[in-house]
Amino acid sequence: MCEIGVLGAGTWGIALARMLALTGNQVTVWSAMEKEVEVLSKLRAHPNLPQVAIPKQMVFTKEIAQACQHKAVLLFAVPSPFVRSTARLAAKYIPESQIIVDAAKGIEADTLFTMTEVIRDELEQSVQGLNPRLVALSGPTHAEEVARDMPSTIVSASADLEAAEIVQDIFMNTCMRVYTNRDIKGVELCGAVKNIIALAAGISAGLGYGDNTKAAIITRGLAEITCLGCAMGCVEQTFTGLAGIGDLIVTATSMHSRNNRCGQLIGQGLKTEEAVKQIGMVVEGIHAIPAAMRLSQEYKVEMPIVEAVNAIVSRGVTPAEAVKELMGRDKKGERGEPL
Image 1 (spheres, helix red, strand yellow):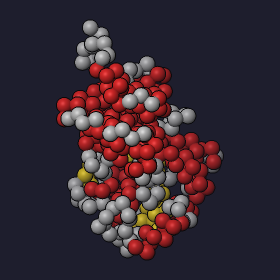
Image 2: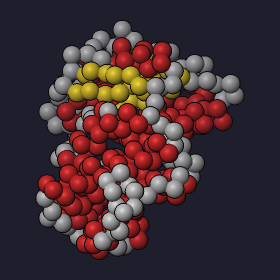
Image 3: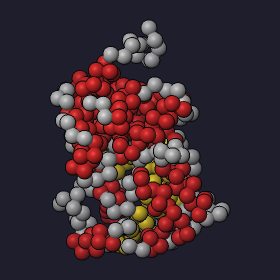
Image 4: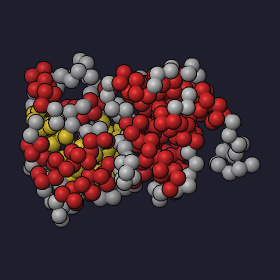
């Protein structure tokens, strides 16, 4: 049994916390919202995870110190826009060489840091000499299914293989199979950019397009992510694995995907702000667009699907106009070479 702290009480944080508690770990969950702590403690249920019971042994707290201190593993499960501020709050309670697992998926627009890089940067700024052991947890794992004990697979990624293997052992059970990967940059890049491709897949569905279009978006979207990742020095095989094509498939096709659903609403004619408001939760793909655009320019990698989504979300181009632009591009070979 391990003492585990979970920062974030959204659907993903609760799904993972529940899974860890049911396998015999002592789990403490922190939320920045006091009302959320009170409701979860009392009702033992999350409003966005219907018919999923929260184990009685799970502890909820509004004191971040309680969730951070004396823990074998500390799990960040807040949305990507709040990772830095959460790390800042937690920093003084985190001991030297703490294993920290990040389950958020995103890239910070200003710094172009992945989420584990954001955590490291913030902790090093806050506490001199703090050297956390950082692991990214990513893969085709919707909270709604993990919370219902459906068989799932995920990747524990870290340059520190020992830390990745410790996390593998803690998170692996009869419903969750965990693989390790040293290519943490590639795994985190996949997790962030696939959300933009899922927005594109949703937009195509909202426009009334079918399976041909969705398959094209997923396949060419993966090609864009892979080209960017290889230009950044990532391992090509990462993109054909669980964190790459696996997570892209589930996010671009599932009814549970906020990005896919948000894209559908945009394709049906809603403004981006209206679509996000209707989803009612953070849509990570929207937040990932500025960083993806900057990375595309910095590494001189053409990413037409990402650019099309950016045009729709940021510049007010209609989905139909963006499709026309995509389909009218100069002809090329499938591997990107001009003809």
